[in-house]
Length: 210
Image 1 (cartoon, rainbow, N blue to C red):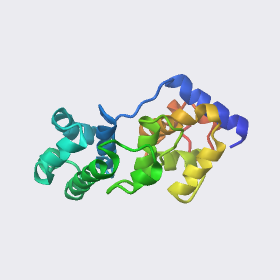
Image 2 (spheres, one colour; image 1 turned 135 degrees about the vertical axis):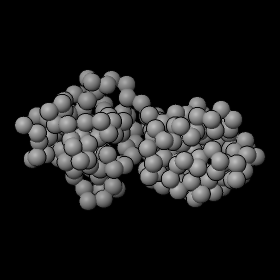
Image 3 (tube, helix red, strand yellow; image 1 turned 90 degrees about the vertical axis):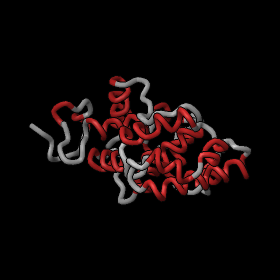
Image 4 (cartoon, rainbow, N blue to C red; image 1 turned 90 degrees about the horizontal axis):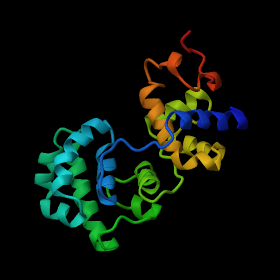
């Protein structure tokens, strides 16, 4: 995709949704971090159903540690891999208290040092909480980037690097959410809704609907 096409691609997405937001429910940087950790291999809808009652009771690392792993499991047992995720959330909460005064750090290395936090999760936190122009590549963004020709790559990291290099600065802050929402609701994995796609004219996908 040419530079001018990339700019137009984002302009069209922005036109449809000027202020895109994460669909995960959160109230504090800590609750966002927990929600993103819980969202691995799970849907945002499923996570929100579990975290609604949880976050009304627990919104700090201190409260999470006090809650304990067993009770946390009761809140999140409907989420896939909840046993491992509960253990990670309790451990990361303890580490936030021990090493960061109970605050979520604005530092990639510090975030990725927390249990259950990888590059994608760190990117989401840095973008949503701290307003950094990071792009977290999940399955939706990986698919959209390769299918459209926006930033092809064989790995999530390669796609992320391609997106950061090719996305104009004016679009970087919201690029993550525009792309994930486009992949979730329009450029779907099995049945892409090409006839309803606002960026269809710029897309390299050969199997477009007629």
